[in-house]
Length: 121
Image 1 (cartoon, rainbow, N blue to C red):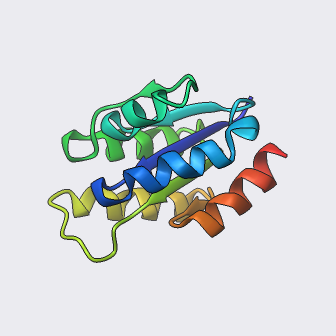
Image 2 (cartoon, one colour):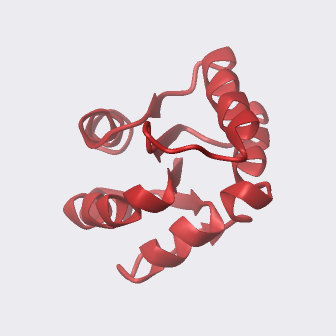
């Protein structure tokens, strides 16, 4: 079973929940890891979710570490491109790690769909 990481900034959490609902059947075939607050929203869809810390408290870094260890097959991270985020260095590290270890990272629903179709279909 492949592990998919799901992360969403506060302004994108509703969009992430809608995305998960749209892809719920495929996601049932994955191990889902999510940052704490995002994961708590995703739990409402009925999916099992392994919760990490919230992003600002180190959740992005925890997922980056899992990625570096080869434990993550793909990351779907709905970022708010217009917001300021105090944990921006962690976000940049996660993106760098995904590039370094050649792990697909989607930042919007269109590329998220491609990750799900490519890894879980």
